[in-house]
Image (cartoon, rainbow, N blue to C red):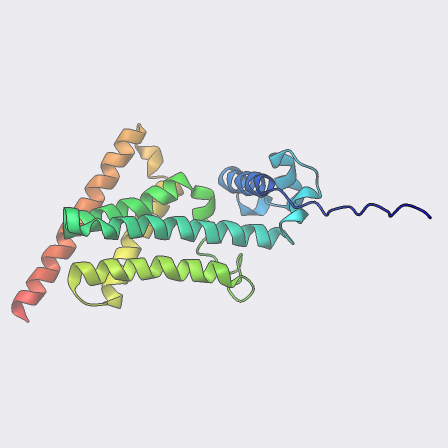
Length: 212
């Protein structure tokens, strides 16, 4: 009677491999742009075989969706941390910290930031986790507005979002960072812009309440 044939346990894809692929993709986005991102090029940058990315990702869009989801998760975490500091530091500091959280994220993660607000690259219907992560970040934005102004005002939320997103875009891709001689100068400029914006917004809101 022949001995029983040994069964081979399927290999589980390594989490480290997934991390390496995502980091390589984010760096590729930062240096070359989304047009250069392909499964083959990501594999080459990660130093793995051409087939290795398929152990974790179905296609190029799946990699982009994972980067978008992770980006919004990181951003939401930073915004939540800023919101939670209001009891210790007050409303003005919370608003400033929220702005720094947004712009700082964009400057530290430019590859992710560039694709997070482009639904043609990450279809919400196909990748609901990305949409949910984006919604969580918006919830933290609205939480900040309610804490600062007492009402869930969509206009105020859009105003704050527009300012920090515009500032982030100028620093990342708009050439503004190139005008600054050093990282210290860049951060000083961001400080000045956010402080001016927060002071104007708070003063305007207080004036409107006074006459209402």
